Length: 317
Image (cartoon, rainbow, N blue to C red; front, side, top):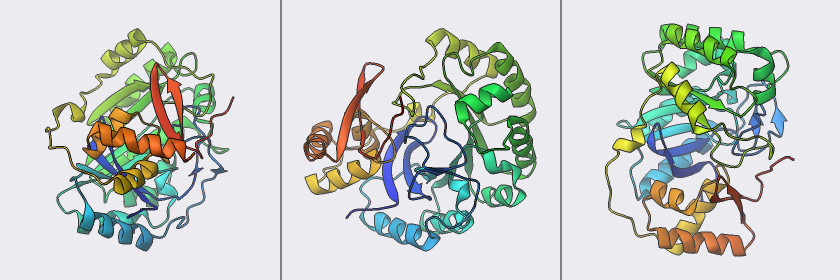
């Protein structure tokens, strides 16, 4: 069975095996981040509307549950853009919890709509919120995140602090560093003060590990990441504690469908796909080769690894 809005599971360093829900159905976002692994934003907007109706997503999720081969650690709202732009997000969170009452419901967000009180209220329905905040320095923020006009990092930070006051779940803050763009000592100092006020449940400092939107954007070196992690008390990966599961036997048809849907949202290696799907690497490799020969996915190299992604993934010069 092929799914349009359900993808994965994919391996998440913070959530373990994460089953993704695509709430946009396309590259609709309030930012056009230079490092975005799903490619350039095609609709840069802050307009909220039901880009994908809640019913369509929940119907697919129910069908996925009926045929699931591995139990996810989290159901994660995300996909090809900013999930809080979907005005039916609250219904999706509630429906996902009804289908998976014992599974964490998580939301990946660039935090841009945290300035909206209604969005903050809707997000309190989730168990885990994973906001990103890459810089509190205005020019760095504009360069790395390329947001909609009028957005400021100060307003987003204030929205996150307001959200922290009412949210009973967990906040996993992520900061992604791009070399020479937002890795300044000024930014580190501002974020250190902010984290002391936000008191997130964990902080993750990362750099580029997959192909992003711009070819000329590069990762920072390991020393920089280590220094930032130490300064911000960055946390341990939840995936490091996951249990080893028996590898599932997939038919080639099912493996190909799952892999194509996953690669449409996130570039991955063969081993990453195999781990996320709990599948045998040889099965995944054959499916990837089949998709590549058919022209449905393409390969690229980043940081010495071969990644595969959907043909719609655009990388700018």
